[in-house]
Image (cartoon, rainbow, N blue to C red; front, side, top):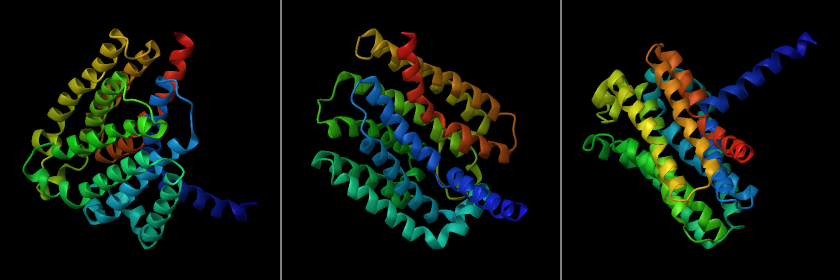
Length: 291
């Protein structure tokens, strides 16, 4: 029995590291965001619309991680070490994601396909141009750009279901955008050194760790405002109210981040911050029960 324990342990450790450092938690979060909006709007749940955001995110993040692996060595050594071991498989993995993604898009409609291609292209452009060039001239553009494209994810829903764009989408778009400002700016705290060396002007490099966290506390609280406004104006159902608990979730990790080491900060980012969006559908389901 002990003969098999070693290989099994190594395989399970390898899988766990891939889930954490391969971007899978965040990609599942993309599916979590879409599922949340589907539940809020009481639309029928379709497996395809949940898989497409995951694959789209994996395409963008796999491309980004391996293009920037040399910059991760100093600021994200755990992820860099893992990705170095996977580097030879990158092309095949990326090709696999693309093949499955396009096979699923063929089962949807033209609007969904064009929308997904546009969003994925925007993610690739971020890696190739936006992060290195535009961010040098516009402080925080990296954060705004990534948050904007993540918030755009929700519009795959009217494309897929071929429904009109309701007022609810506006409030949910702003909510997702603000939540992602918190997420992306928080992640940049651990990358201050490398981003500063590359002259990438993120909020973290501009304001420093302490002040960035203080600013994010404000944005974190403000992110609940579009939910309250949407509910007040009857654009959103009352069960959406529980999504405001994400501000409490954000308060906890923002407060914790001020008192931990760089390694613990990276762990907090990968395991806690990225996992937030997976929790959202559970909040909506809980809201249905409570209200």
